[in-house]
Length: 128
Image (cartoon, rainbow, N blue to C red):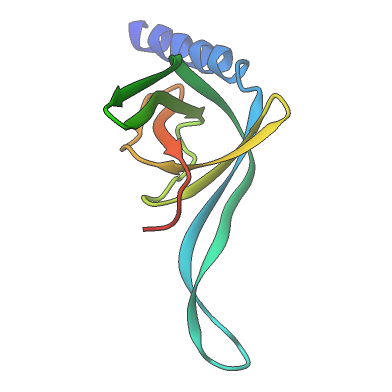
């Protein structure tokens, strides 16, 4: 009886979290792709998933930490999506939210909950 109530609460929590998804993302990964004609295998970017509902969260305001002539801008960027969405290490994630599209890289191991997955991101630079 209690276990069923917990499952129902988790289901309701997931529904509420998913109502906050106001963006979509596309997940890309580098993979070995063999050209059928030349038989040459090349490392190419491949789309793994597209139009995945999500939400980006930005913690605090953008702050600049400056020392001497160098200034680093730091901001925590967190992606929320369904717990079953696979995001391999090293992926590039392109997020469109509120009319803006930006590319990010996966920087942290995802925190996976029954209702959602949270991934810390950083602005995309290039594949490692």
